[in-house]
Amino acid sequence: MVSSSNVVFVALASSCLILLHSSSISGWSDGGATCGGACGYQGDMEQPPFSAMVTAGGPSIFKNGRGCGACYQVKCTSHRACSGVPVTVVVTDQCPGGPCLSEATHFDLGGKAFGAMAKPGQADNLRRAGSLRVQYSRVPCNWHGLDIAFRVDGGSNPYYLALLIEDEAGDGDLSAVELQQRRGSWAPMQESWGAVWKYNSGSTLQAPISIRLTSGSGKKLVARNVIPSGWQASRTYRSIVNFQ
Image 1 (cartoon, helix red, strand yellow):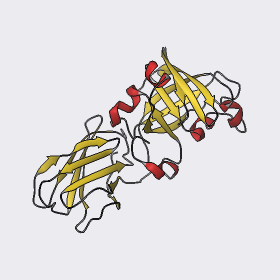
Image 2 (cartoon, one colour):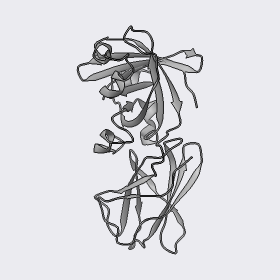
Image 3 (cartoon, helix red, strand yellow):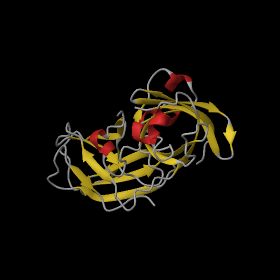
Image 4 (cartoon, one colour):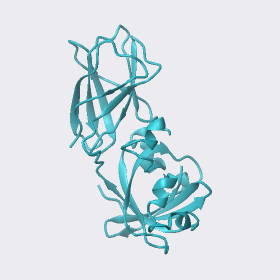
């Protein structure tokens, strides 16, 4: 999936603003952005595979949380400090208010990601540039062999399970999540907030528990028995599968 629009970046102290305007440029888009976790990734944003190459998104990017985990390439060419080389960022947060709502497409880039668009040694100059045009494109996420992780929310209990799902390759985002208890059938989980999905059982959950994921483009993947017997809240359980 490729999008093209013009982006204006404005450096605001530790923030960076990109404003997106609709106009097609050979497979890339012009738009707007700022530097900025409504997805729930918390401290993981600084760690691999995200490594602080992150962005918040306006409504068309964040999609009420369903855009969490999606990957985009962003590049700038309109300032002398721009390298013109695209950098890949992942959606980890929501960009609320102001230009985030007034622009059709808006990215709020983290400081590291904003500086990464610059020529060597020019990151600070680019952040001080004020406004400039950028281009963006939706791309598959490539986590270099890392498998999908399921962090059990701290509020989970024997009757209620909430999972933060991260490190999905390919589309990066999810359109549906289902749960299967031991000797049970598949049951839909509900979106809680950001990248967190929840399930109210009404009775004691029977582990091990399998999770079936549907990506944004409709691909399905099963993490078999990924939540083990004796699971604990606030623990992370990593599967042995990922989207291709």
